[in-house]
Length: 130
Image (cartoon, rainbow, N blue to C red; front, top):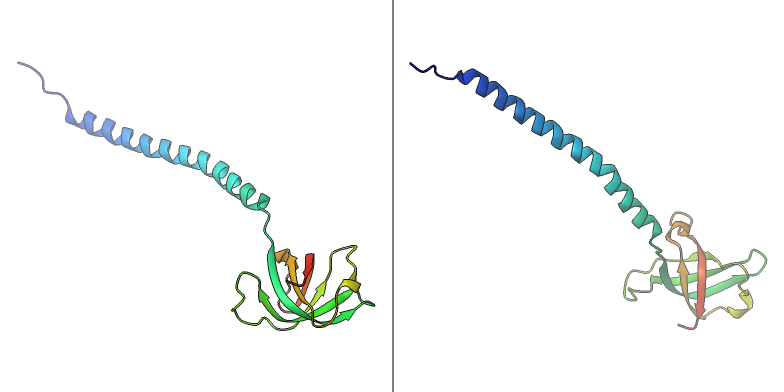
């Protein structure tokens, strides 16, 4: 007579293999995720992003080195809502004499300098007459 195999051993070994497979998958996923997140953060940080506003100059304050604009809108949405009156700090070495009240300007700026609560923005580039 032939002895039958112990089915309990097969069940225990199968359960252990399943648990080991789950643990191995968790370790592999955890090892991969920090590298992927770091790559995404680096890609986002290296992306240069600037925004543009179009507006009308209302006042030039040479003493403070700023000028005031109104009828302010994002350049890519000319029919959008008026953002109101803003005080703009021009880029270094920009000559305020090129601006006069009533002139149309396009202002390029870094979004981090766009202080909505104070209505101030620091321009990186200013184009007059557009």
